[in-house]
Structure formats: C-alpha cells, structure tokens
Length: 559
Ligand SMILES: Nc1ncnc2c1ncn2[C@@H]1O[C@H](COP(=O)(O)OP(=O)(O)OP(=O)(O)O)[C@@H](O)[C@H]1O
Image 1 (cartoon, rainbow, N blue to C red):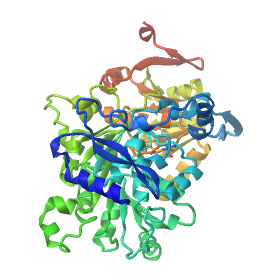
Image 2 (cartoon, rainbow, N blue to C red; image 1 turned 90 degrees about the vertical axis):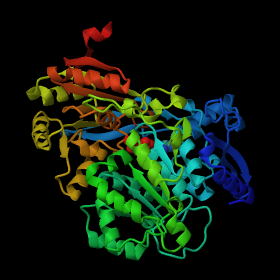
Image 3 (cartoon, rainbow, N blue to C red; image 1 turned 90 degrees about the horizontal axis):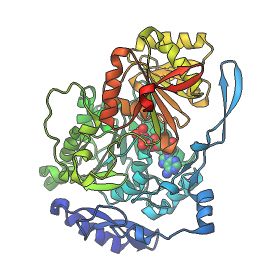
Image 4 (cartoon, rainbow, N blue to C red; image 1 turned 45 degrees about the vertical axis):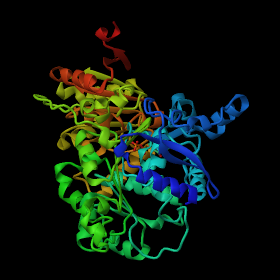
C-alpha cells in the first residue's frame, strides 16, 4: 500500500467513529493501481452522505455525446444472451429474451456509483479477470462496500435481492488473499485466509462457482467447498492437497471440520456470514458460535491481544450480508465486530448510530420494514421504504380454492408466458403431487427440497438452469440467495410465513434490474395476509385473475 494511503488508513482508524461523524471516500493517486478511493471524514455533517457530498462524484468526468453512446453500448451496458433455447414439454422452442432484460447500470448510477472496478481500488489483475468475465460496471452496493472493506472495516451489507452483494464482499477479499491479490508475495503458510458461511448447500456452491469464475480455470483450486451432504474424506483430501486460501461452506460441515482439527483458520483474515439473519436462526446457533470463536483467533500468541476482547475481534474482519437486516443482526454485529459499519447502496453509517426499534406488542407476524434498522434511522428517512425488494418487480395476488391452486399456477404460467418459474409451497409432501399434476398437463416441472440427496438437488437445479424444467416446485430451501437470472416468475402456492420470507422468495426474480412478476395464490381466507404484506413491505400487490389465457386485473384495483 502506498505510504500516503497507509497514513490515511492509520489516521482513519485512530480517528474512530466514536466522534459520531460519518465517513466517505476520497481519491489517492497510487503509483501501482492508478487512482484509488479511500475513506475520509466528511466535513459537512449536515449533508446526507453521498459521493457528491464526499467530494467523490465531483471527480467523475461528465460523459457526453458520442462518448456517452459508446459507454452505453460498450462499457456500461450489460447484455444478456438474446436467445434462450429451451425444451418445453416435448417441443423444443426458442424463446426470445424480453427487451427489458438489458440492464443498463450506467443509466441508474446512484450517489455511490462508480464507472469501473479499477476506480474502487481493486488490483489490475482482478479487474482484468472481471472484464474478461463480462463484469464491467460495479453496482451501487459494490461501489459502496468494496472501498469500505478495503479500508479494513467490519461491515454489515444490506441491499435488495439481486443487487450484487456477493461480489460486493468477494472482490475486496480477492484483492487481499489468493492469486489475484495486490501484493504478490510467496505464501508462507497453508492457513485458510478467508471463510464464507452460507445457510444452504446450493447457495454455498453458487458462491464457490462465482469465486472459481473470477480466479479462472488454473487457480480455481484456491477455493474449496465444505458443504454438508458431500463426501467428507474427499473434502479433507482436497484441503490437504490444494491448500486453498478460501473455504465456502455450510455451518454444520465447517464447524465439524474445525472441531476435528482439519481446518487451519487461526490466521483467517475474513469471515463472511452470507444471509446472516438466517444464520442467526436457532438451528445454526451452536455451529455459528463455534465458527465465530475459532476463525481468525490467535489468542494466546499475544497476551495483550488475548486479554482484550476488542483487540482479539479486530484480528479478523467480520462481514455480514443480507437483503433483510433486522435489529437482531445489528445487535450481533456490534458484539462480534469492531466498530462495524452498515453499508447500503446509497449510504454508509456506523452501526452504533442505529437506535433500537421501539418495543412492539401483540404482533403475530414480523414486519420486514418495521424491523429494518434503516427505517428506524433518521439518517435514512429519505430512502425508499422498500429496501429488500428490487423496484423492477410487479406483485399480484389471486384467489383459488386449495384444491385448485396447482391449476391456477398452470394458468398463471401460460397467461404470463413465463419460461422459468419458481413456485413455493410450505409442505414438502405436496411438492410431488403438484409436479405430477403439472406434468400430466404437459408442463415440464420438478421438485427441489432438503429431503433429496445432494446429487439429486444439484442435478435438478442444473436442469432448471438449462431450461429443461419450466416450473421448479420448491420450499423455503430455495428462497435465499439462489441466483437464476432467467427466472421471470415467482409464485407463492403456499403463503410465506412473514414479509421477510416474502421478500426473499420474491427476490428470486427481477435480478439485477430485470423485470419479474410475483403472484401469490391465496384462499379467500388468506387474502388479508397478502394485504398485510403489501402494507409491511410498502409495495402494491394487485388482485388479479387469469382468464382465457390472459391476466385480468381485479376490478377494485382499477379505481
Ligand atoms: N457488476 C456487475 N455486473 C454484472 N453482473 C453482476 C454484477 N454484480 C453482480 N452481477 C450478477 O448479478 C446477479 C445477482 O448478484 P448476487 O447473487 O450477488 O445478488 P445478491 O444481492 O446477493 O442477491 P440475494 O440477496 O438474492 O442473495 C448475479 O448473477 C451476478 O453474477
């Protein structure tokens, strides 16, 4: 790190957030990496925290005329494959991708927006790999989180589903550990340097694939999956043979390997808890506790550190991530992290500045918006009330008797001409029956749930991703983190238990600015739940019906 930058880091760390002031970015010219952004203190405390108020945006060039066109066409517009070939039933047909599926990140640049990854202080080797894989413009949450993590801060990252949170934490980690890191020096130990924990095998494997993609085919051995249900001795052998720098896994398998002494994590520099609010659930508590206690802890080596809990904590960076961050996460992050920051697409605030929500009584269901710390934070009042759902989603509900719900699903898929559908049910035993009914009517369907073997689960997901399955019937297992960009429709056959669950299910569609539709099929007696969620999430859930192959909006909604 250049001397000037190092000085700023020290100043920054010394001048802690105890002053209650917010921090932003400034640019330092670093000979090796071009210009790099660093956090500095904001002088004008009365202004909202944006790149402009931080003197960040002002450094951006204004792009006009031809250059703007070029930027839109070449640099900043992400283009998805224009055609998706898919087998529907026995027919094989080519489905053109909808026009709206072109995501123009540059057109929606927010206050923390950056025009390139190199602007954010990532090393050139990593930026080259990103370019090669087609990642050219950072999303808002990436532009905010990457510099904050590079500044060695503990963070909680909250941003709506499909907004690119995975790369928001992976890129700063990959710029510090592994073959693409800034300072290339020979590795002196075979210790794990970064660990990512995710609540499901599918999500953990998805993160592994994302890291492998960035590392490239030669270096992908530097990441190792440690998911439950997979062969343990093979995982042990791979750890010994490949000496990975990053491990990604589920809490149970990681905790098991750790207690068996198979994982060398005392020098681990980064611990990521992805879908942290889910990882705080009771069933993961013991494993997560073990992980937090053992990863990146060198207590004993330095008696001064061993006696000071805060110093011990600060040996490792703790990064917590989710689209939904209830106050329980804020509380946990405060006790596990060291002066952590809450990083969102358009703001960065110290967690200490977030007040506890007022106690509430008599609520049967938890409200995502009520529990969202930001809506309780005066700093963030100007922000949209819905922060866990992408704005590109359209929400509907329709009414059907329980025995007609699957048929309503089929009519809904036809009317919306959807080709990649995830339908949620609450009871695993009903999934098989629903698949049978859809297949009998010529609609390719498959079930996905936790009772299937790891191999069956990955085979079904592969088929769904490839377009060999049109409707994936599943339960809560698939609600979190699953990234299938082509998914254009989510259907709730069984109602989600609360608005947090609604948000994660709904977020499987409309990824990264794509259009998406969410339809909840209620019984008459369940309509009030859909209306309650509409209020809690701050979205419009319109009533509709599917008649003669068309979607018809309910009469009362038209007025
Ligand atoms: N800068 C970028 N440019 C293009 N594509 C991107 C960029 N960042 C992320 N993506 C893609 O966007 C999709 C969604 O990203 P990701 O899965 O990280 O979202 P998320 O915010 O973690 O969602 P969720 O809350 O549902 O877990 C992925 O397919 C990812 O590869």
